[in-house]
Image 1 (tube, helix red, strand yellow):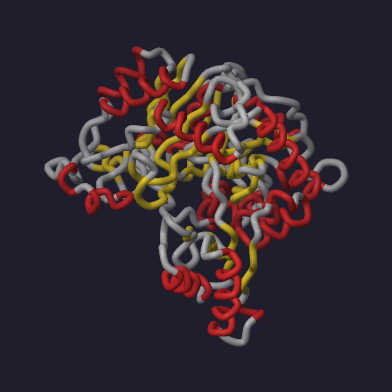
Image 2: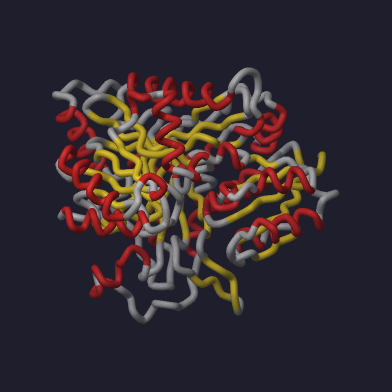
Length: 474
């Protein structure tokens, strides 16, 4: 069996799933060199070499890669921060280790303004109406706010306010979710504007899906569609989070989508890809340059945003059911020979269990918090026993947790993801919830309606109403 060394830059459950897929290889003996944000127990147990870099600083990751230069054959980067900061350009130039992620030039999630302008060139019909407010275009913030008011009049306040750079200012704000008055919009806009350019675009109504595609720089390989749940609480209430869970149906479509929707998505992303790729092969695009949030509206799919990385949680619906050797898939990506990826025809449901401080849960539901458990160690043993009984149909992926003093403790973000795999969404959901229920300690909680029949039926009915009760094709 041939040995291969793989560098993995890790943040949470997404990378735990990648680690599992790499180690399942039947063709290669995989040695893992993991640069982790914390002492993730899953990664610690499987890494040949492990380092904790809390801020995922690119220079420290570079030093780690240099230390094992002769042992690492390639690497995979999961989190967006080092990708946006150009980790691939730096490590490939200074160490010669090829990385599976876009170069800095093609990490287009680094600028929401650049995204919108690219889409306006390549696929203008899928852009919402938008305006860019850049400090360089206005002598003062008051001048910018005067133009903003005119734009709000035109859109009747139905807007989304987005900072150009990730994590700048107050982040994305949406009418009806984050503000319900013009004064709140202006305050949110001003906070973001102090940090740089801001996009104000029309709010889209519809049903959201996540489109992910692997790329070798020459070929674009779409993966099955998934649905993310961003809001913290059941019924899509509460603040937006990093994603409380997601589901995938049997096949490559979602229950509320038509086959035409799916084909239209593929065409849209292919046009963007061609615009970026140019002639021949463009290695700068390898990895997953397109993880696109689509909104399915009255007029068809529109683009909310694009990310240049594997989705979290959405890739957790896909990686556990890959039918191919993931190391071979990686080599085909690096070689420019990725012609397709075979995925098992199953449904999957991913659900996150999160700490009591996450999403404002303690404030919203103080009576539900198990205060005696807050800050206590997390016990995964019962869930892991269940997973072994389910023989691959349940996966446990620790995320924002760390191993210390012999115990596993939740940090501030999503703690553990459980993926259920089944012949139907209902079966996959039942398996995932069973695993979630077996996780003890830490005061952890989760949404109960991810992938529920009620939620899916509501999505189907909503889109049918928007489209004049046009039947949804199956």
